[in-house]
Image 1 (cartoon, rainbow, N blue to C red):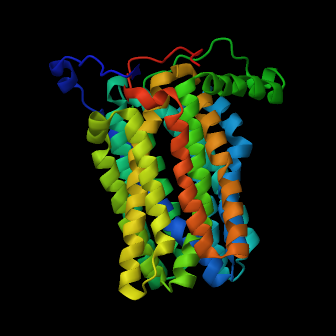
Image 2: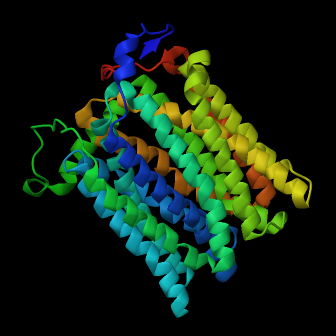
Image 3: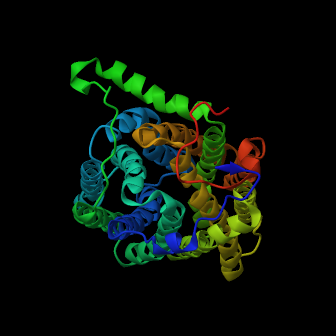
Length: 439
């Protein structure tokens, strides 16, 4: 990365000849399909708890926390496994586990045996497999995509995610209306099987493994995992720009999970939205994600990387804070909330397009798994705490006040960027990692 100045431009003919490989498009297709299915579950699972099992703010917060807690508990082990084992094998195993776990929800509902503990266990199992899949996926992308195209690839991935999330809520609303909330979760289970079927056709480059790594079975497992995971964590802590973006993302995720814990309850309880209307709002919000993914790269060219990270985080806070200020009813409320979420998701996607390639730019290939796991552990480890806090505040203070406080607090994420060397960075240089001792 180069601070304060624009990098020397690469020769235009060389850049023009670089194209994202076929394997990346297969990876993107599978990821987009599985994310569309996950977007269905994002609406269908809490609505199953709310409408079928009578869950309140605290129960929905616990449900969200169950899905996030594995990041805190399993992140270090996932990083070690990803740096040791083939990424595709890990992705296929994780996808299969998620498909089977999700399928138990509609089966139990059809049998008349569904209960909140079942949903908690399912969310925990899916969350655990998601930790492994996320870390493996992040490490897999640089083995498929040339270094000079990683920002472009991340923009495509975020764009695919935005389209998936835009499709998921309306699809969920239709499936829930036509069948039921538990039955809609079948779509997510099927999506993971589709993603798994595409993975064997993704061509990857071999990763240089650390020759000094001892087999996990030959030494104390806990000691080996701890020492290798610590290597990734120390790299994050000692690299100032990586540290800043990690804590900024952690603040964003913590506040957003507190916000999400009561968001659907606010829509269905306070504003009287139906499942279809809630799905429509989330679909429009995801269109903001599409817009964010499209404008992220040109916006960075105009503002510079540091400024675009700051502006995108502040835009997210403005969007989140507008929802609890909507005082209208009916269609006016729908439009107001949709605009609010559009701005929130636009800011988040602009931020995500640029924050992930920072890891690729600063991290050696042999450390990708452990560095990503360390970041995921911090970022998503705070997510269940945010969800539990949001659920508790929703019970004590009400859903509207909780949305206002947590939405406004999103702006605190920008402080980490402003107070770091990232503030003056113009653009990431992806040819190689920065020194590990950067402070």
